Image 1 (tube, rainbow, N blue to C red):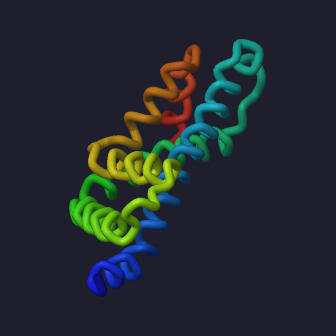
Image 2: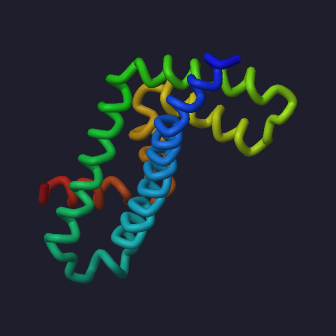
Length: 142
């Protein structure tokens, strides 16, 4: 049992960082899509849009791609996450919180799926009318 406690105590902070990264990516992509939705509105397209604002949005697109590439490169994260989940499961038999279980499954899927960041972003952007023109305009500035 001591080895499982050590595993949880060592990997716990790192798993929490991974959870925070996942939450950040999802909230940032939602915020980015809100900004694109605002820019894609027909009335807003007539107004002046600053180059700095477009550059910031382009840098966000670059950040999403970079985070996705970094996440895809690190296969050891999946191994460490599986080890942590196994140790935590053994230590917490019978005391499983439904929210923690769901979050753990989401985290596993997030790290196990290649290109999950850009796929999630693309899925959200597809709900925005005229998103292609807006994103294209942002990338021209970059």
